[in-house]
Image (spheres, rainbow, N blue to C red):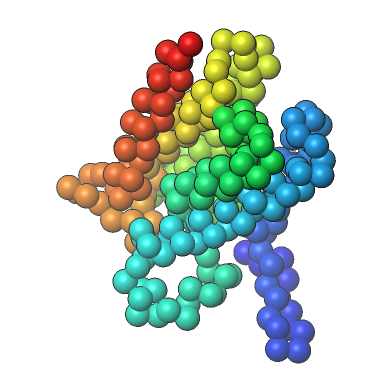
Amino acid sequence: MKIFDITILWIHITPSYYWLMYALGFLLWYYIIKSRKIISEKILDDLLMYIVIAVVLGWRIGYIIFYNLNYYVANPLDIFKVWEWWMSFHWWVIWVIIAMIVFSKKYNISFYKLGDQITLVLPIGLWLGRIWNYLNKELLGFSNYYWPLNINWRFPSPLIEMLLEWIILFLILNYLYIKKKDSFKPWQIASLFLIFYWIFRIIIEAFFREPDANIWYILNYFTLWEIYSLPMIIIWIILFIKLKNEK
């Protein structure tokens, strides 16, 4: 849904509430990290730029390659239609990790500790995005849903995702970090975030939400998103255990 639609000279401007939610997510992330004084404010501005670029490029390139490559090969100019962007969570996570590695080397900061701080606040942006998915009637679940107003509608799966990503991924992980951080090694919190996120998303995809039109089923049951997610879960569980066993 657009906030407004205006053309100035030859430039067409149509900002959406969806992008507004992500902008708010980035701003909240910035001020929370700033308040915790993890890194200096000067390099925090640089880190924000790294993260924003990684997220935007990552989700666009990932969506094109993994979900709709045939279409964009046939319509290459549509790659630049930024108002029609869709997300690929897997791919922008990889890009953010790469951006963090580059940033950490540039400023000689612990990559693992930085990863924990970023993932502790990341659920805020996901939470805001899910609110807008619901308000805009996107990513809804199966039809014939009547509760609570006895209206034949679709199951509001974004609300379930919002609760999981907010309550579990933000409140619990931040509780563990603040109250029991001595029990965790650097990057274990980040690993927990990624493990739980993908587990919850697989549950949502399997039981509460119809896949997008371009995300087809494998073997008549598993969605393409779930197939991509399984190796991610395995990788982060192995990394979590490995870090835990390190002396």
